Length: 245
Ligand SMILES: C[S@@+](CC[C@H](N)C(=O)[O-])C[C@H]1O[C@@H](n2cnc3c(N)ncnc32)[C@H](O)[C@@H]1O
Image 1 (cartoon, protein in one colour):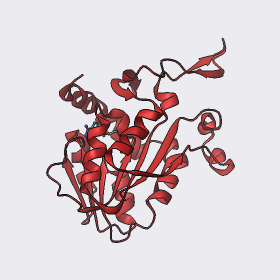
Image 2 (spheres, protein in one colour):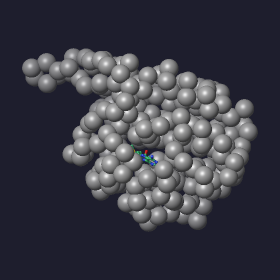
Image 3 (cartoon, rainbow, N blue to C red):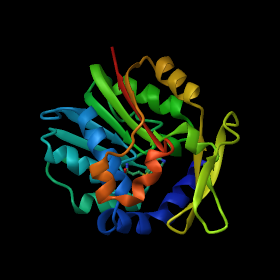
Image 4 (cartoon, rainbow, N blue to C red):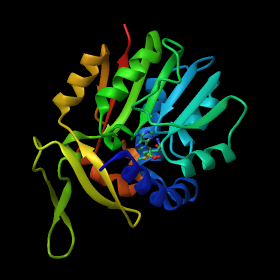
């Protein structure tokens, strides 16, 4: 798959994706990842922020509402960026860009970078990590939510004859590369890598790993979002909090 193929897939996904984010239930984000991502971002008041793979801009809007001075949302998909611009406030900006190549941003000009379920979509995470490291000021942080490598490997539930989930089958873990899925009725591609490959990539770019979080649900969240019961059983997601020394 080259960049144009991947871009086409996201274009095909954009309409159902935007509808789901804006009008759907969004349990994984609202009930599991948002709070952790916001806590790890910390106090964003006055910060210059870049969001890699911002989609239709929901997390940019959350950071802007929390006082970030400037949030730049980057996404390869024009339809996502057009949708983000519809709801944009004065301290948000959106641009069609490939987050593996950020030459339009100067060195050490950003305080905080985020990547909310985007690195699994990238053919080259090393390039993204290197570029984000370059644009961050010393002391700046990069907060990344991603599919858990245990789940991006093969990741289907084995069910009994009545459809009840028995267990997840983990297979092909060391076989890195493309995986083909269907989401919201659209075929799309993402990329599996092992945990060691991710950590090596962060380290090679120069980052220090401050925290690694494997999200699971609290009783309160589970009551509000019973569909998150999987999260008590298997690690679907992972969050890395990195800093530039
Ligand atoms: C799973 S969505 C997440 C969107 C958003 N961060 C959110 O949480 O709602 C992944 C996004 O990454 C974008 N994307 C994929 N490859 C990209 C690339 N190379 N550069 C920039 N954005 C990319 C897609 O267009 C899509 O909007």
